[in-house]
Image 1 (cartoon, one colour):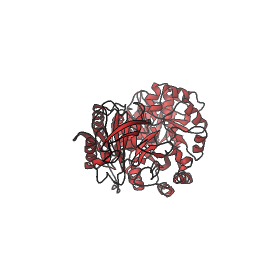
Image 2: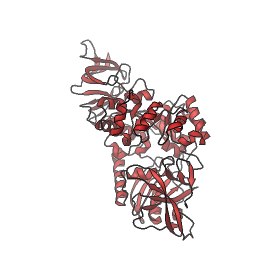
Image 3: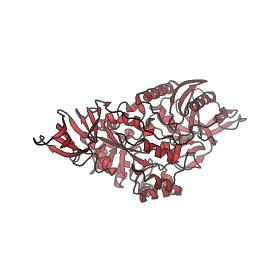
Length: 564
């Protein structure tokens, strides 16, 4: 006796990239039969679904992502993505890890248990992303941390090794972390925005297996030839890159992933968006589904998921056609989870107590937004972090003459400059410098979402607005605040680690939409205003960014002086 039969369906065979008419039988949450033709007359099941005019496709598997980037807790994330067909993810909780250390990572693992979404975990390698001398974080992970967390049953990987220069010889602690991950039998995920040639080979020789950063044709060719699993997120799913993939003898080492996806975008889909985008720029339809299910499953070592086959987990979607999302129905382990874009089960919170962590600096003062001493009224040549375009977060170092008054920079209406300050959450260090090309004309942005250390980031044209925004974040215990002069325009409360909300996605998405609209009204003209500003503290993002210790050259891993 079977538990469940789906009959009269078209089945997506991703091993052979074909569709065939047939039926499947399910028992104890796994496929038992996957057959062409009609169900035998003597075959019995407790429940039979006639899926005429529908296609049965494996659930989608996101092999590289960060739940925290969606600003919601694991259960709310599961609620958001299951209706779009995502049934398995590999989550790297390095955002929480940087704020609350090993205890924070364990909290994320525990909070991900007993959900209908299958959540695997990577241990963050980048706590901190660089070193304690360059930025403050709530903990410093070492090889012992990796050995401890590797015992958790959902852990299968070491998260992206972002400090690629550190692995090449500048960070013995990181090298020991990677060595311990290999001893623990973990996948080692990569982060390779700029390495090529012998530097790339040396980095990969440590056992790094993948890269998800912005890519292009020559980079794909070199990485594939050197054994890398290439992961394509939104910015890399282009006609040019897809043409390269289609020309590969073996495309199974190219995956579709989301990496970071904001709550506003979650309302439009999850990994399904990557599938649709890949198809729209030339990837054959079944190849796109394979790159978002079967191939990720193979990469993750999950040999019993990612396909419709006997013995595999019965995680699947029913689609009217392969280009239409959300699915008509989504099943996990043979149980109906979502139907016509609506969740059909209640996911309750079973969260452990939050560990101790610093939410915001205990004291915030306007003087922390000076870029030099209080009595400084001279003209200086300042190093400036300058955004290079309006679509990505690439920055380069520029210099400019700046007039100071009492240590504060004096701006012209059209100079495209603003103050960028980072205050360590523990209150023991801070830095204020200059940023260019945000588009900000007035007001201020303050946020405890500031990748990856997530100290308090404040960007503004005048210190009064900056102080109002920063104090607003303090008052709500962590989150994002937009202010103008002495008035708070809008805010987003993130009570879990200053990073996450447990409100439903539509509520958080609406609040983020309001924030982004406020930023645009203040002049921020980037494609993704919130994400762009929040990455200005990412100390491994090319080529210069800010930390609580100063301006950092992210390639050389060196702090730079404010005055050139």
